[in-house]
Image (tube, rainbow, N blue to C red; front, side, top):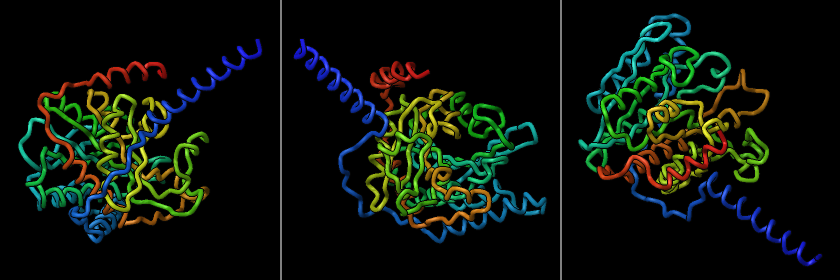
Length: 346
């Protein structure tokens, strides 16, 4: 009797360990050590810093209602140095806005989208905004443009407008209009990479917080890494991008997959691509959970331009590692199984 109870207890413990191991694997996507690439194109840290300064000056001038160059025109003018940009206008609740995009690379049937929101948010979110994502987008465009003969797939760089405190999926989101336009034109989107803040890093112990305490057991407590996150359905995509990012020297990468309503998974432009059945993920420095507590409102965010330059190199490497595959089905068998798993959490 007692021995039978011990056997059952051991069975349960083994089952719990297996479930925990599977959850750890699906949530964090651990990968084997990846050899770094030594001949990556150099991203210019001076360019990144100048973009940040210029974009913040423009945002400040617009907030003070002063006449100045608008952000979309600044981005359009810079894209013109590289190729032939276009504007996608849309009407929001408080006026007319423009997405700015630039297509680089070969004329393939599929493409990758790299996007960032250029409109400073209002409300509480404004404390966590900085222009590092847009600066990284512009420098990535320069690097891709200078090396477009090496690209195996077309890459579209998009700067999104957002009208005020817009909610994802509404007509006030520039990314909503761009994603819907791709769907309406039946353009095959292999992957969307959404940039948030990507320039704030800390190397002190316990400098990284998380929305749930159990995440401390899965992720570092030092805020010196870049984060990749998406829904469970895009598990394979996140894992692939993580491989590409891991090829960049001195860039620590962590990844997270989970249900769409889980903290750190949604809440940005990539959600609008999910709604159009496109694979999309968010790239972030987890700024909200990295800033010193109690100093959010009046804290000047110091950006690490060296780390930002490595994020730019990682985006270039991701484009290089993705090829247009016309025969690729819309959803893999693995993704279909993950959809069933995701439904459990909804």
